[in-house]
Length: 312
Ligand SMILES: *[C@@H]1O[C@H](CO)[C@@H](O)[C@H](O)[C@H]1NC(C)=O
Image: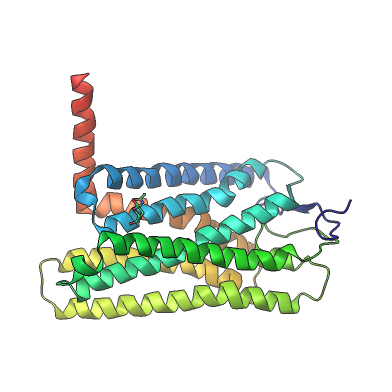
């Protein structure tokens, strides 16, 4: 049954999220509801930004891009996890496991880079307001978004090239409800200490460095905002606090999953769920409930829909 490069493992066994029926039902409803909210909320942001010319500023274009990535990140694991909840013996084929891992790292990598781009956008808007429109011109926006995608894909490919050459000869119990490098590497039939170090050095270092960079830049922007006395102060505070909330909530799980050497399984599960369903609903929630521009855009959009319905 040789599979890939002399491996004998053709599938991995996934861990169930819950044993008791009550807890399974709860998780099923919880994940289903949140996943629906992730899809609807993020698509809503994307369409509002695309169709409303008032929102064609870099900040909202980047927000729409982030929404798209959030949707992608959630889709890498949640649908499978939902459909797996009630099956007793959860297995994932070797190929699907590799695909899932690859996309988690593409989406996760692009998300981190987009957060950096968004912080840079806020930095120029707040700290260099006179040059903002010159610096963040449409071409610059496209370049930054493209760079985020390219670097994210390079990151995922580099991890992938590394693991595709390993051989897996069993056991094949992942001890996790989805496929990711730290878990899969433990199952390779060789001394895995050095491999684990490479993964920690790659994903862990990137998470930690990006997190520190973002927090430092937000503190810097906040200090700059404090010195200015402008009407837009509360608006700036709103946007920044939303960004900071997303950053803290997104990066804490990443750092725990990739950097912390002694993860416990229940903590692992909890943090993974935060990144796959909680963070992705955060943006739609924050921006549609509390942002004035988005609320106005929603009103305009519903009026348009209403008018076009009256005409037909
Ligand atoms: C994402 O960013 C690019 C580059 O600025 C832009 O052209 C595109 O419309 C954005 N995507 C969405 C869904 O807004």
